[in-house]
Length: 115
Image (cartoon, rainbow, N blue to C red; front, side, top):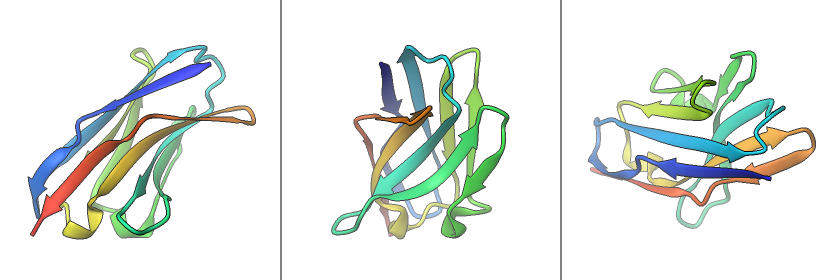
């Protein structure tokens, strides 16, 4: 089992920045991919960014150039630096970890961007 705990959400004005953190614990060996998803009100959950154990990253088109995903393997933590935030980035953000065919989710953290 893997436990994921997110932190760093909050309320920010448009144009501002936030950094989300996701700390992994438990049986964390062989986690090959971690990422962030989000669910906006009335919408389905969507992928935002992901990073592999080798450091390869990918991003949702609308966040490219504004968001950066990174990981600290020594701390078993993945980060999402979010800059130039827009009201449409408002959502609950979820951390995700892939271990073989098993997927784990965090509890989510609210990000609200005011105009």
